[in-house]
Image (cartoon, rainbow, N blue to C red):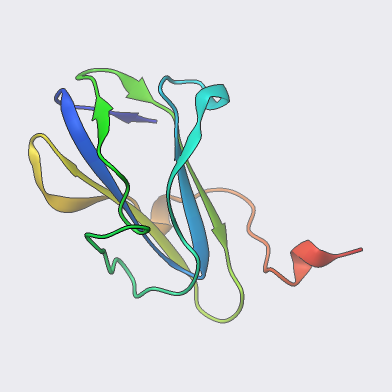
Length: 116
């Protein structure tokens, strides 16, 4: 979950090794999530970009509202990382909101996901 501190337009950013995507819901429910930003191949750790596809379109958020956010990450081989950041009202610089130390869950290498 994330909570917007101020009402306005926010941008979301992704950096990962290898592929990753971010989903955001209009509410606290995962049922309303839509993909907002993704990366298809390796980027440097927290190497943000001001252009699509690694930066979302402007997304209007309401102050005090909680939003469900989900990160999906696929590792191909060797090192791995995934980070998500945002910028918007009251957040003038691109600021990480999800970093490797905060990610909890199962991870499978792409070769494991292709089991028969």
